[in-house]
Structures are given as C-alpha cells and as structure tokens.
Length: 117
Image (cartoon, rainbow, N blue to C red; front, side):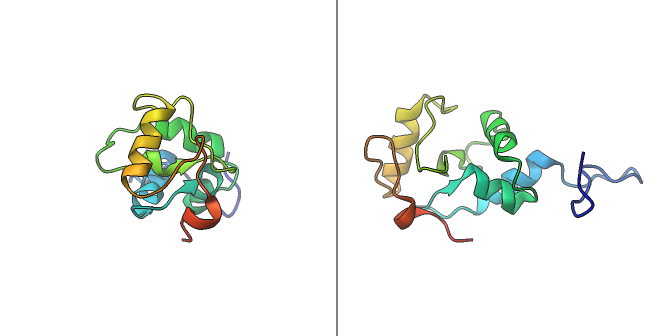
C-alpha cells in the first residue's frame, strides 16, 4: 500500500512506471566509488524511508551486479552484511577496501565514508 505522497509501483493506464526495486537500483547506482550508503538512506532516496528491508530484498536479488554496486550498502551502524549475496561479508569487505573504504572488524566509519546525496 502506498501513501498519498508516493508514486504507485505501476500506473493504471498500462504504461510501466518504475517499480520499487527499479527505484532502489537507480539509487544504488548513484553511490560513488569510495562511499557507502545505509539501507535506510537508500530507502528514503528511493521514495519511502520504511523500505529498509525491501532494499535488502532487492539487493539480494540484484540482477546486474556489474552495474548495481550493492556492496556499497551497509546497515545504519556501518556494519557489512554477514549474508552478502556475492560470497559473504568478507567479499563485501574486499570490494569496499578495493575502493579505499576501510572496514575495521566489518564496520565502515560512516562519519567519513557515508555518501551525502
């Protein structure tokens, strides 16, 4: 169910509007190299701050990992995911550190590396 301020997932005239996952992927594509965003931040930028879990679901089924850098999304405390879709938390850490984002004990310093959209 959408609020009065949200766009519906599909238009009633039969034309496709971006669905929720597409909106999430569009936000994640914008996260710059060397930065991270939180699930809640992505949810808010995609249109609904209550979609944090939906962001997780969308990233878990990422259809285009080469162009949708879901490894740049961390939780609200900066923790990487234990169940990262591409090989567990260690793989997410490897990808972030390759971009210059240190992950001390699986945690990113959000004060330094969080994307300011």
